[in-house]
Length: 351
Image (tube, rainbow, N blue to C red):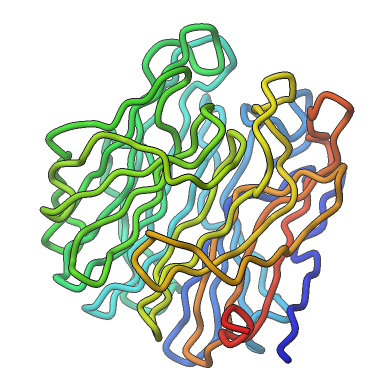
């Protein structure tokens, strides 16, 4: 029987109360490069609108230990913070690096943000000058055709206010991320809308988008033209609160892996339900059914969210996510949000 090792990857403290939104790329020497949002302590103390930089570290042992801390992107003067780093190994061999600068993010006001794309030709030692864009999303994937897809969202109205409503789509590039096009239509849903899309390529080349919603379930949309157009959103039948999930394709088998909060809808609870347990499952039929459902975290007072997943060349799987404690209403403690990791072998998901 395989095992899964769960540990705190980056500790939270008063100087850096929150560590979030990790991304990993494997370098050509077999080491791993991690980038994440490193929040800075202060009045906002780890909330989404608190200041942050993008930091990185290196692992030479498959993700068990991490060293060589450095700041990849500093928050710009006058901006609120830097968000959503994404590292992607391109088929060309370069590493594409995407991130978002929030010029202004505060509850009940319009978002002001710009995204940036740059690349590294020397295994992450240096990056090119970034090009500026207006789309907002994560994570990047590259299709078998070579097209790069970025799931994106638009916030209509005031963020985290009564008029906050979001729609989801995609941006795509056919020239390794130099030029981008926006999908022709957007996916919309009731209440707060279609949030935080994640996209995976299916065996027949179609794309599957999973969506965070306030509707008590994960919703989905399909694209048959590489992300240019998307079907109307419909439920997957998988229960869940309003929280981010990770949908990805397992490179070795072609099956899908889903990481999400497998909990019941509760309109009286913060974000419409508990963000626990943190659960994984696989699909062998392109998302029509799910099996081998297992829990990574089960603390009933925990809050586990914002997962991401990386598959190494040695068939290790590294899942990262944030963890915090909650009060009776589900409000999280933003003053102490460490970045956690769960590492296992690929076989564990099939046992």
